[in-house]
Image 1 (cartoon, rainbow, N blue to C red):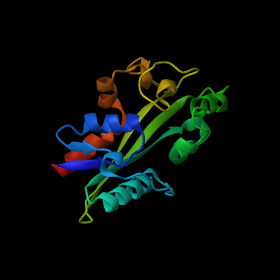
Image 2 (cartoon, rainbow, N blue to C red):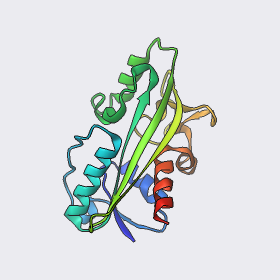
Image 3 (tube, rainbow, N blue to C red):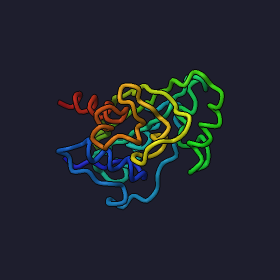
Length: 185
């Protein structure tokens, strides 16, 4: 089956392509989609559905989208659904670490809601969660976003220090996509 991954984030598109083995994965650009809908939802699922519905409507091809975020206990769940808008691009990790300065409770979790929307109106959705801690400084070169500051105690490394295969096995997005695929079988 062909699916369009409703994201303009190249790192996220690569992750989806690896996770959706057996699917013919296209990007919005490959289908002529040039704009991204505004994420106006109050939840991760609402935003995933907004993106998947828009791309499916524009292309006539099943579309899969996610909305993911970092929820930090010491910050009352922030940045949460506003993770991509928490600070200016290129400053998000720094802004997070500045807000976390002096905090003893470093517990956090990545959350993903993923939605698959079909042209006939059917919708399937799932969620994935990955628990960890916020580091004192960025570590690692892999991944994107908050990965360099998200430490996985069971792995002894940050998300950005994992290989793509290791990350997909434990990540919030990997869990959400596997949950979604289980629902489809």
